[in-house]
Length: 574
Image 1 (cartoon, rainbow, N blue to C red):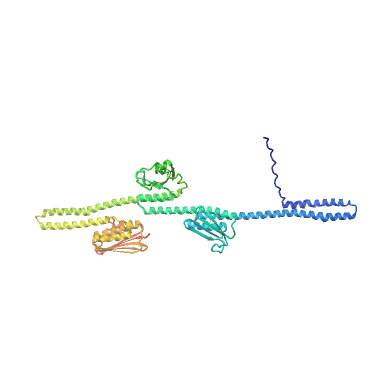
Image 2 (cartoon, rainbow, N blue to C red):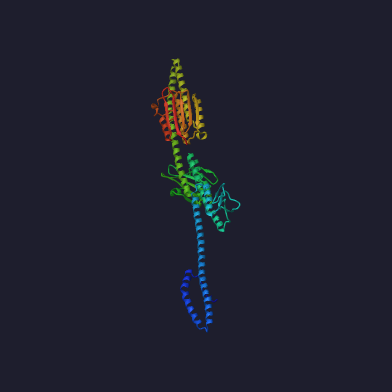
């Protein structure tokens, strides 16, 4: 097949001569050309045979050819002028379009900036509606999203609501909801395209605001879990549950280092919702996360080693300034379950959980110390009180046995004394049992627990009691425990030392909570006994004051021998 002959390149389009070139050409070329033509014509006219022919020739030349040349020269210049004016008009129109586009672009950028700074979803909806009016130039705009949130904004118009004369344009928001714009004139295709593009940007901004709202809600729930829970398993269940709910994960587990530095399972819940017993060593993936000290993703084999049937897992280390504390692991049956997860937020939540674990462990340790102190106190009471009294009773009974025949009257008196001492020790044992009886503050609350305790105290010790509660009482759980413990100590001291017939208890709430315990007993000198340990409750007066002052409260005792005792304690309200 013969080679094809190449075609010549297309001729360039004709280029218009510029107006300045036309004027220059007419000015430089036309005068000499006119001179040459006139000279030539005059030479030709001189060759004519008579004067009449010369006159006619002059009339024809100067009357027709001259004006025609002038007309076409001016028209040629005018054509250039019109072309220039047309080009200037097109440039002005293009500049106007570019200015309008630039203004719309700036308005869109401002809208996205405002959306990124919106504190919550409701504020984001309001910002998006105002931005839609600013970008499109609509007279009215209404934006509604799932969840019942909506906003309506009026633009540069005096009409409070859209009228029937306005042209409505409804655009669907990709993530759900719709945006309705109203215009004074029918929207152009460019405006429709702009509104549709704006709807996509608004959807992205609203989704970001929704995610921020969810993040804040999750952090709040985690914070509440940390504040309200001291049981380790329940604490880890709440923290990991909030994190799993945020990501839509189906399984979760928490591993903590024990006192020997071994990472062990503390809490876990599988895909079926079953909770597992703790104590088993951590799997390889949890150990890898603890060693790396940063969030890690695991797949297939590693995931199955943590949760059966899991395809992907996310591990979050728990660390503080003292070193590693444990690892939180979330699992899912989907391969891409944790793609795009908000890892910084989850890492922050793991840090909060670390503080909660430290606090829970400190609380458990303090409970162990309290139990140890209470055991020592009970042993001391039994040794110093009941044991010695019972030993004395045994001696009395031995003496009775020796004198029963030789001196019956003396033996009978000794039996009576031993019997009285035994009854007194029985009352002392009952008082100790009453003081040690567990009280469920969490179940009944402070006021109901105080009411029950005061009533039971009066019945157990045969003392008249009265309780007066006024004002609004609101304390944190820790402050409630301290206040109730102080009431126990005060009443136990009344029963053991005051020999009172009546005791009054009052709780008053006004800016703070004030507890007042007043008895009509024998009284005492506070300065003489302030450093001693109370045998009935285990805390001396100094320890009571220290506990209250550590929580921002105050404590005082008013007493004197023979004048009864008044104890006042105050704590700030939450």
